[in-house]
Length: 134
Image (cartoon, rainbow, N blue to C red):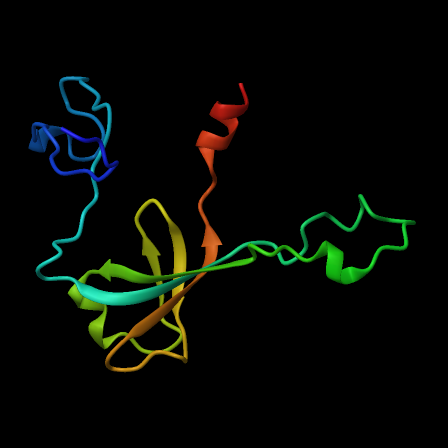
């Protein structure tokens, strides 16, 4: 079978006693899966913002660089095929939400009844970045 990188199946078990990461018996889970049912989900656009400048201003202090060279070309990533819980359908502009494992988002004024747009306002701390540096 050809490997495409697309997840087709997950084998796991569900233990309701550990749904918050541990149990009264002291058993801890190795991972938690968060999901949204694709059949009941709401299609949304998500905008992920990163720092506008590629370098910090302190590292370029005293240098005469063109400000265009310092711009981060990856400062905005638009994800147009995301799925969200149907409960967000009636959210009002400016409403804030935490998207599991992603960060905090608010509903953008660019939203319409056909397509909601969410902007990330705060990302979550990336503990994997520390782990990968080791």
